[in-house]
Length: 307
Picture (cartoon, helix red, strand yellow):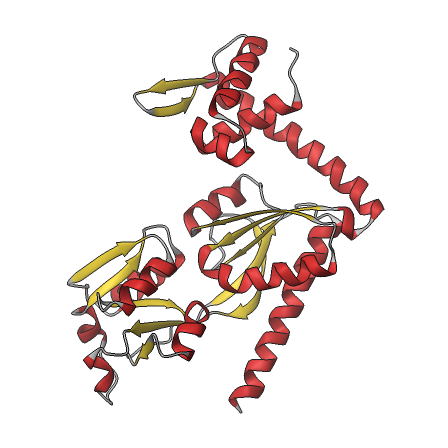
């Protein structure tokens, strides 16, 4: 069987995304180039690895088996590269990071500062929702993940690096802000609530909040990004629950305001995580330590400001 590393990487990308188009985007290739690599690989293997039914792509039985071995081979190549880079030093490494979308507001600053200190580090960054992040972790794809609550049933080493309170936001013109009394969970559930999409950690926390209090929102709208939610709330379409870190600028300049609701803020934390037993390269270990250090410094500064 004569296959190339390039073919293996293209195959893994298509198998992970179950889409030739998304694989092409991820690899910065054209879709015909991806299709050609897969055809050449299937010819070398001697069996079809994918089947297309309607508009959906599925792995064949051979494809599922080959994917397992492909990931083992690519992991070993990555490990070899990391071990060589660890001899060279931190600045020669390749860092693969997956970040929950809510964490991205703070993580972007973290990553920028880290890259200024280590200019030759190559970074592959994916920002996604909790559901996809957990899938990436299960496949052992990122070196480091920055996320909310660590999952049950998946072996990960996770350490909290920062508090992440969830607050209720409204447009400054919303009459609910005039009340001096905290709004009850029942009253909150009667509002037009804008929620993140299913699979989001924030969405899970909000649904748990209502479930524990035995109430259900009467009106809900789903949006797939925090930016869309903030714009919708600012326009007066409803209220929403977001991480306090995502609205620091908007609340500071008066574009959004926090609504006083019983049970809020919901206290959560952000975690820096990786699969248990994963060999962290010198670069990945340095980034993990950096995140923990910067998170601690941020928390200490916040305490000083609030005194």
